[in-house]
Amino acid sequence: MEHRYLGASGLLVSELGLGTMTFGGEADEAASRALLDRYAEAGGTFIDSADVYGGGASEEIVGRWLAGRDRDRFVVATKCFWATGDGPNDHGAGRRHLLAAVRASLRRLGTDYIDLYQVHAFDESTPLEETLATLDGLVRAGLVRHLGVSNYASWQLQKSLDVARHRGWEPFVSAQPLYNLIDRDIEPELVPVCRNEGVAILPWAPLRGGWLTGKYRRGMQTAPVGTRWEADKQPWLGDWNTSVDERTWAVTDTLLAVADEVGRTPAQVALRWLMQRPGVTAPIVGARTVAQLDDNLGAVGLVLDDKHVERLTGAGARPLPYPHGYLANSPRRRALAHL
Image (cartoon, rainbow, N blue to C red; front, side, top):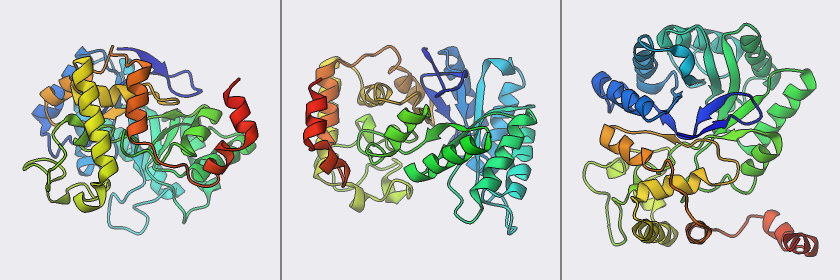
């Protein structure tokens, strides 16, 4: 498996990260360990968790699995922000919660350090300087190696980078947003910020909760039984009624056609399209079974040619929001496009 630098840092991560949100829930410990074994066997080194996954069980499972291996071979990432208790300070990105959360994650993971510590969401109620100063202290103390974010708007990330630069604090080197063939809202603003600032993009839900695996076909009125979209089990992606439209089916149709042409599964093509997108370092794949993971791992080594990339990209394209569309049509921008 290819390894890529995590943004402007010197840390190398495998081109597919293994997400562990299913661990301790949809995947019990035996299934979770089998997924970790298969991922490591394929050359994967980048394991992504969060303190709220499985109520902490995900980190515990990863920690027990790491205990029998060379810890330094793996890049372990986790996140903090959401409530881990019922106290008034058991959530957010304030100093008290961050310090308590990192200690708890280190204990559950059974490790002395976390390679990538990510703020799971922007905290509008805490001064940004408090958050960034605390995170910088964690790096200086050796408890954390690098810092990242998830679910940040472009202005929130840019402001964080600017404040950290001004103060001489450790900057964020990665962003983990929702990004896939259908969910492309980050392209006009967040992607340019990341590329300009040397921030790695680590897409979550790269297969849109299973939508891009070939299970969904035009004409369906409801999700197949047993899938994650059944009974709207994925509130973070929207429900069936608000997510299914002509654009969704156009992307799905194109994906199925391209997969057939290149002789690969839809999941492999969808992942490879994402892996070839500007600024993307490593999509975070999740699985409940080794068979699902094996399908995802099939994206490694695949290269989509320009014509297939253009078809897939075009199928889900939307008009650029203002002012991006206005600027794209300016005479100077059109002239630069021909250089």
